[in-house]
Amino acid sequence: MRIGIDIGGTKTDAVALAADGTVAAEYRTATGFGAAAVLASAEKAVRELARAAGVEPSAFTTIGVGIPGAVDRSTGRVAHAVNLGLEDLDLGAELAARLGRPVWVENDVNAAALGAWLALGGGSSDSMAYLNLGTGLAAGLVLGGTLWRGARGVAGEIGHIPVDPAGPVCPCGQRGCLELAASGSGLARAWAGGDGASVRELFAAAAGGDAKATLVRDRLVEHVAAAVRLLVLTVDPDRVVIGGGLSSLGDELLGAVREVLRTWAASSPFLAMLDLPERVEVLPPDFPAAAVGAALVGAAAGNVSDSSLAGGAD
Picture 1 (spheres, rainbow, N blue to C red):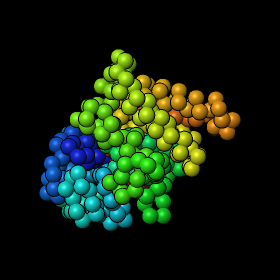
Picture 2 (picture 1 turned 180 degrees about the vertical axis):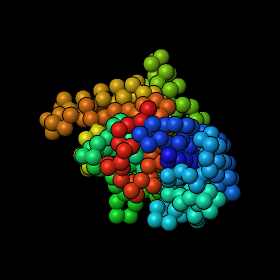
Picture 3 (picture 1 turned 90 degrees about the horizontal axis):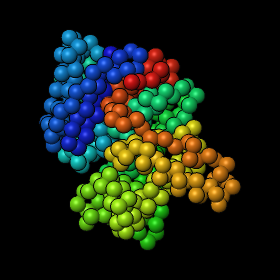
Protein backbone atom coordinates (compact mmCIF):
# COMPACT_ATOMS: atom_id res chain seq x y z
CA MET A 1 0.00 0.00 0.00
CA ARG A 2 1.25 3.44 -0.98
CA ILE A 3 0.61 6.68 0.88
CA GLY A 4 0.19 10.02 -0.84
CA ILE A 5 -0.01 13.38 0.92
CA ASP A 6 -1.16 16.62 -0.70
CA ILE A 7 -0.09 19.57 1.46
CA GLY A 8 -2.13 22.64 0.58
CA GLY A 9 -2.26 26.13 1.95
CA THR A 10 -5.14 25.37 4.34
CA LYS A 11 -5.65 21.60 4.32
CA THR A 12 -3.65 18.42 3.96
CA ASP A 13 -5.27 15.53 2.08
CA ALA A 14 -3.85 12.02 2.30
CA VAL A 15 -4.78 8.75 0.65
CA ALA A 16 -3.82 5.11 0.95
CA LEU A 17 -3.53 3.58 -2.50
CA ALA A 18 -4.07 -0.16 -2.89
CA ALA A 19 -1.98 -2.33 -5.20
CA ASP A 20 -4.57 -2.09 -7.99
CA GLY A 21 -4.56 1.72 -7.89
CA THR A 22 -7.84 2.19 -6.04
CA VAL A 23 -8.13 4.61 -3.15
CA ALA A 24 -8.43 2.40 -0.06
CA ALA A 25 -8.68 5.19 2.53
CA GLU A 26 -8.62 8.98 2.76
CA TYR A 27 -7.81 11.44 5.53
CA ARG A 28 -7.93 15.23 5.77
CA THR A 29 -6.51 17.59 8.38
CA ALA A 30 -5.64 21.29 8.68
CA THR A 31 -2.17 22.17 7.41
CA GLY A 32 -1.15 25.04 9.66
CA PHE A 33 1.58 27.55 8.88
CA GLY A 34 5.33 27.16 9.24
CA ALA A 35 7.71 24.21 9.18
CA ALA A 36 6.64 22.68 12.51
CA ALA A 37 2.94 22.78 11.64
CA VAL A 38 3.44 21.39 8.12
CA LEU A 39 5.55 18.50 9.39
CA ALA A 40 3.08 17.75 12.17
CA SER A 41 0.07 17.68 9.84
CA ALA A 42 1.85 15.41 7.34
CA GLU A 43 2.95 13.03 10.08
CA LYS A 44 -0.55 12.99 11.58
CA ALA A 45 -2.08 12.12 8.20
CA VAL A 46 0.23 9.13 7.70
CA ARG A 47 -0.25 7.85 11.23
CA GLU A 48 -4.04 8.09 10.96
CA LEU A 49 -4.01 6.10 7.72
CA ALA A 50 -1.67 3.56 9.30
CA ARG A 51 -3.98 3.25 12.31
CA ALA A 52 -6.96 2.68 10.04
CA ALA A 53 -5.04 -0.05 8.20
CA GLY A 54 -3.80 -1.64 11.44
CA VAL A 55 -0.11 -1.25 10.55
CA GLU A 56 2.87 0.92 11.39
CA PRO A 57 3.88 3.69 8.94
CA SER A 58 7.06 1.75 8.16
CA ALA A 59 4.90 -0.96 6.59
CA PHE A 60 3.81 1.23 3.69
CA THR A 61 5.46 0.52 0.33
CA THR A 62 6.10 4.20 -0.42
CA ILE A 63 5.26 7.56 1.09
CA GLY A 64 5.06 10.54 -1.26
CA VAL A 65 4.29 14.21 -0.69
CA GLY A 66 3.01 16.82 -3.11
CA ILE A 67 3.61 20.39 -2.01
CA PRO A 68 3.48 23.80 -3.71
CA GLY A 69 6.65 25.78 -4.22
CA ALA A 70 10.20 25.10 -5.33
CA VAL A 71 11.08 21.47 -4.62
CA ASP A 72 14.42 19.69 -5.07
CA ARG A 73 13.10 16.26 -5.84
CA SER A 74 16.51 14.59 -5.49
CA THR A 75 16.83 15.65 -1.85
CA GLY A 76 13.23 16.23 -0.77
CA ARG A 77 14.08 19.78 0.23
CA VAL A 78 11.50 22.56 -0.17
CA ALA A 79 13.41 25.72 -0.95
CA HIS A 80 10.48 28.10 -0.94
CA ALA A 81 6.72 27.84 -0.30
CA VAL A 82 5.37 31.27 0.60
CA ASN A 83 1.78 30.30 1.40
CA LEU A 84 2.99 27.65 3.85
CA GLY A 85 5.66 29.79 5.50
CA LEU A 86 8.47 27.47 4.41
CA GLU A 87 12.04 28.41 3.62
CA ASP A 88 14.68 25.75 3.00
CA LEU A 89 12.86 22.89 4.77
CA ASP A 90 14.37 19.41 4.43
CA LEU A 91 10.87 17.96 4.30
CA GLY A 92 11.68 14.52 2.94
CA ALA A 93 14.43 13.72 5.42
CA GLU A 94 12.65 15.16 8.45
CA LEU A 95 9.40 13.38 7.71
CA ALA A 96 11.25 10.13 6.99
CA ALA A 97 12.96 10.34 10.37
CA ARG A 98 9.58 10.59 12.07
CA LEU A 99 7.96 7.77 10.10
CA GLY A 100 10.80 5.29 9.66
CA ARG A 101 10.32 5.14 5.88
CA PRO A 102 11.85 7.05 2.95
CA VAL A 103 9.68 9.95 1.80
CA TRP A 104 9.59 11.28 -1.76
CA VAL A 105 8.68 14.93 -2.34
CA GLU A 106 7.33 16.44 -5.54
CA ASN A 107 5.79 19.72 -6.66
CA ASP A 108 2.02 19.50 -6.16
CA VAL A 109 1.08 20.16 -9.79
CA ASN A 110 3.42 17.42 -11.00
CA ALA A 111 1.95 15.09 -8.42
CA ALA A 112 -1.58 15.98 -9.55
CA ALA A 113 -0.57 15.24 -13.15
CA LEU A 114 0.38 11.69 -12.14
CA GLY A 115 -2.89 11.34 -10.25
CA ALA A 116 -4.90 12.54 -13.24
CA TRP A 117 -3.02 10.16 -15.53
CA LEU A 118 -3.94 7.26 -13.27
CA ALA A 119 -7.57 8.33 -12.81
CA LEU A 120 -8.14 8.50 -16.55
CA GLY A 121 -6.54 5.14 -17.30
CA GLY A 122 -3.33 6.29 -18.95
CA GLY A 123 -1.30 3.63 -20.71
CA SER A 124 2.42 3.24 -21.31
CA SER A 125 2.25 4.97 -24.69
CA ASP A 126 -0.11 7.75 -23.64
CA SER A 127 0.84 11.39 -23.19
CA MET A 128 -1.11 13.86 -21.12
CA ALA A 129 -0.86 17.49 -20.09
CA TYR A 130 -2.55 18.32 -16.80
CA LEU A 131 -3.65 21.96 -16.70
CA ASN A 132 -4.01 23.10 -13.10
CA LEU A 133 -6.35 26.07 -12.69
CA GLY A 134 -5.99 27.01 -9.05
CA THR A 135 -4.78 30.15 -7.33
CA GLY A 136 -2.19 30.19 -10.10
CA LEU A 137 -1.87 28.39 -13.42
CA ALA A 138 0.62 25.67 -14.28
CA ALA A 139 0.78 22.36 -16.08
CA GLY A 140 2.24 18.93 -15.38
CA LEU A 141 3.33 16.66 -18.21
CA VAL A 142 3.16 12.86 -18.25
CA LEU A 143 4.79 11.39 -21.34
CA GLY A 144 4.63 7.63 -21.83
CA GLY A 145 3.72 7.17 -18.18
CA THR A 146 6.69 9.21 -17.00
CA LEU A 147 6.53 12.62 -15.39
CA TRP A 148 8.48 15.11 -17.51
CA ARG A 149 10.03 17.86 -15.41
CA GLY A 150 12.40 19.46 -17.90
CA ALA A 151 16.09 20.27 -17.65
CA ARG A 152 15.64 22.55 -14.63
CA GLY A 153 12.33 21.36 -13.27
CA VAL A 154 10.18 24.10 -14.78
CA ALA A 155 8.48 22.19 -17.60
CA GLY A 156 4.81 23.17 -17.66
CA GLU A 157 5.18 26.61 -16.05
CA ILE A 158 3.03 28.09 -18.79
CA GLY A 159 1.32 30.49 -16.41
CA HIS A 160 4.39 32.68 -16.69
CA ILE A 161 4.34 32.95 -20.46
CA PRO A 162 3.55 36.62 -21.26
CA VAL A 163 0.47 36.94 -23.49
CA ASP A 164 -0.21 40.68 -23.12
CA PRO A 165 2.80 43.03 -23.38
CA ALA A 166 0.64 45.88 -22.05
CA GLY A 167 -0.84 43.83 -19.22
CA PRO A 168 -0.21 44.20 -15.48
CA VAL A 169 3.03 43.17 -13.84
CA CYS A 170 3.03 39.57 -12.67
CA PRO A 171 4.55 38.59 -9.29
CA CYS A 172 7.21 36.75 -11.32
CA GLY A 173 8.44 40.13 -12.59
CA GLN A 174 7.19 39.84 -16.16
CA ARG A 175 4.26 41.71 -17.62
CA GLY A 176 0.96 40.28 -18.86
CA CYS A 177 1.49 36.62 -17.93
CA LEU A 178 -1.19 34.06 -18.79
CA GLU A 179 -1.73 33.30 -15.10
CA LEU A 180 -3.02 36.81 -14.52
CA ALA A 181 -6.07 36.09 -16.67
CA ALA A 182 -6.68 32.34 -16.23
CA SER A 183 -6.46 31.53 -12.52
CA GLY A 184 -8.28 31.98 -9.25
CA SER A 185 -6.13 34.94 -8.30
CA GLY A 186 -6.73 36.53 -11.70
CA LEU A 187 -10.46 36.01 -11.29
CA ALA A 188 -10.42 37.66 -7.85
CA ARG A 189 -8.65 40.71 -9.27
CA ALA A 190 -10.96 41.03 -12.25
CA TRP A 191 -14.34 40.54 -10.67
CA ALA A 192 -16.14 41.63 -7.48
CA GLY A 193 -13.27 43.85 -6.45
CA GLY A 194 -10.96 40.97 -5.64
CA ASP A 195 -13.08 39.69 -2.78
CA GLY A 196 -12.40 36.05 -3.60
CA ALA A 197 -15.82 35.32 -5.11
CA SER A 198 -15.91 31.86 -6.60
CA VAL A 199 -15.89 30.89 -10.25
CA ARG A 200 -19.29 29.29 -9.76
CA GLU A 201 -20.71 32.63 -8.61
CA LEU A 202 -19.13 34.31 -11.62
CA PHE A 203 -20.73 31.90 -14.08
CA ALA A 204 -24.10 32.20 -12.34
CA ALA A 205 -23.95 36.01 -12.50
CA ALA A 206 -23.00 35.87 -16.18
CA ALA A 207 -25.88 33.48 -16.91
CA GLY A 208 -28.16 35.94 -15.13
CA GLY A 209 -27.18 38.75 -17.48
CA ASP A 210 -24.57 40.62 -15.42
CA ALA A 211 -22.55 42.45 -18.09
CA LYS A 212 -19.34 42.71 -16.05
CA ALA A 213 -19.53 39.05 -15.03
CA THR A 214 -20.09 38.06 -18.67
CA LEU A 215 -17.02 39.99 -19.76
CA VAL A 216 -14.83 38.46 -17.04
CA ARG A 217 -16.21 34.96 -17.67
CA ASP A 218 -15.56 35.16 -21.40
CA ARG A 219 -12.03 36.46 -20.88
CA LEU A 220 -11.33 33.68 -18.37
CA VAL A 221 -12.62 30.97 -20.72
CA GLU A 222 -10.69 32.36 -23.70
CA HIS A 223 -7.44 32.31 -21.74
CA VAL A 224 -8.06 28.78 -20.49
CA ALA A 225 -8.62 27.79 -24.12
CA ALA A 226 -5.38 29.59 -25.00
CA ALA A 227 -3.57 27.51 -22.37
CA VAL A 228 -4.97 24.33 -23.94
CA ARG A 229 -3.86 25.46 -27.38
CA LEU A 230 -0.42 26.37 -26.06
CA LEU A 231 0.07 22.93 -24.50
CA VAL A 232 -0.97 21.15 -27.68
CA LEU A 233 1.23 23.30 -29.90
CA THR A 234 4.30 22.86 -27.69
CA VAL A 235 3.98 19.29 -26.41
CA ASP A 236 1.27 17.74 -28.63
CA PRO A 237 -0.11 15.41 -25.92
CA ASP A 238 -2.89 12.94 -26.57
CA ARG A 239 -5.09 14.93 -24.22
CA VAL A 240 -5.20 17.95 -21.95
CA VAL A 241 -6.92 17.42 -18.61
CA ILE A 242 -8.20 20.45 -16.69
CA GLY A 243 -8.00 20.24 -12.91
CA GLY A 244 -7.56 22.53 -9.91
CA GLY A 245 -10.10 24.63 -8.05
CA LEU A 246 -11.64 26.28 -11.13
CA SER A 247 -12.39 22.85 -12.60
CA SER A 248 -15.13 22.43 -9.97
CA LEU A 249 -17.46 23.82 -12.63
CA GLY A 250 -17.00 20.56 -14.50
CA ASP A 251 -18.89 20.29 -17.77
CA GLU A 252 -19.94 23.94 -17.65
CA LEU A 253 -16.33 25.08 -17.90
CA LEU A 254 -15.40 22.28 -20.29
CA GLY A 255 -18.27 23.13 -22.65
CA ALA A 256 -17.35 26.81 -22.70
CA VAL A 257 -13.67 26.06 -23.41
CA ARG A 258 -14.57 23.63 -26.17
CA GLU A 259 -16.85 26.23 -27.76
CA VAL A 260 -13.99 28.74 -27.92
CA LEU A 261 -11.71 26.10 -29.44
CA ARG A 262 -14.35 25.25 -32.05
CA THR A 263 -14.70 28.95 -32.93
CA TRP A 264 -10.96 29.23 -33.48
CA ALA A 265 -10.91 26.03 -35.55
CA ALA A 266 -13.68 27.34 -37.80
CA SER A 267 -11.37 30.09 -39.06
CA SER A 268 -8.10 28.14 -39.01
CA PRO A 269 -7.61 24.94 -41.03
CA PHE A 270 -4.43 24.37 -39.04
CA LEU A 271 -6.24 24.40 -35.69
CA ALA A 272 -9.11 22.38 -37.15
CA MET A 273 -6.62 19.66 -38.05
CA LEU A 274 -5.54 19.40 -34.39
CA ASP A 275 -9.01 18.46 -33.04
CA LEU A 276 -8.46 20.60 -29.95
CA PRO A 277 -12.04 20.38 -28.60
CA GLU A 278 -11.88 16.59 -28.58
CA ARG A 279 -8.51 16.49 -26.82
CA VAL A 280 -9.51 18.49 -23.75
CA GLU A 281 -11.39 17.05 -20.77
CA VAL A 282 -11.95 17.83 -17.12
CA LEU A 283 -10.79 15.85 -14.11
CA PRO A 284 -13.54 13.79 -12.41
CA PRO A 285 -15.12 15.84 -9.60
CA ASP A 286 -13.77 15.42 -6.07
CA PHE A 287 -10.95 13.13 -7.21
CA PRO A 288 -7.89 13.76 -4.96
CA ALA A 289 -5.46 13.94 -7.86
CA ALA A 290 -2.50 15.49 -6.04
CA ALA A 291 -2.67 13.05 -3.13
CA VAL A 292 -3.05 10.05 -5.44
CA GLY A 293 -0.21 11.31 -7.59
CA ALA A 294 1.98 11.81 -4.53
CA ALA A 295 1.45 8.14 -3.75
CA LEU A 296 2.94 7.35 -7.15
CA VAL A 297 5.96 9.61 -6.78
CA GLY A 298 8.02 6.90 -5.11
CA ALA A 299 7.17 4.34 -7.81
CA ALA A 300 10.18 4.14 -10.13
CA ALA A 301 10.89 7.84 -9.64
CA GLY A 302 7.56 8.90 -11.06
CA ASN A 303 7.43 6.36 -13.87
CA VAL A 304 4.33 4.28 -13.37
CA SER A 305 3.88 3.03 -16.92
CA ASP A 306 4.97 -0.47 -15.97
CA SER A 307 3.28 -0.49 -12.58
CA SER A 308 0.26 -2.54 -11.59
CA LEU A 309 -1.28 0.84 -10.76
CA ALA A 310 -1.77 1.60 -14.45
CA GLY A 311 -5.23 0.09 -14.41
CA GLY A 312 -6.93 3.20 -13.05
CA ALA A 313 -8.42 4.41 -9.81
CA ASP A 314 -11.91 4.65 -8.41
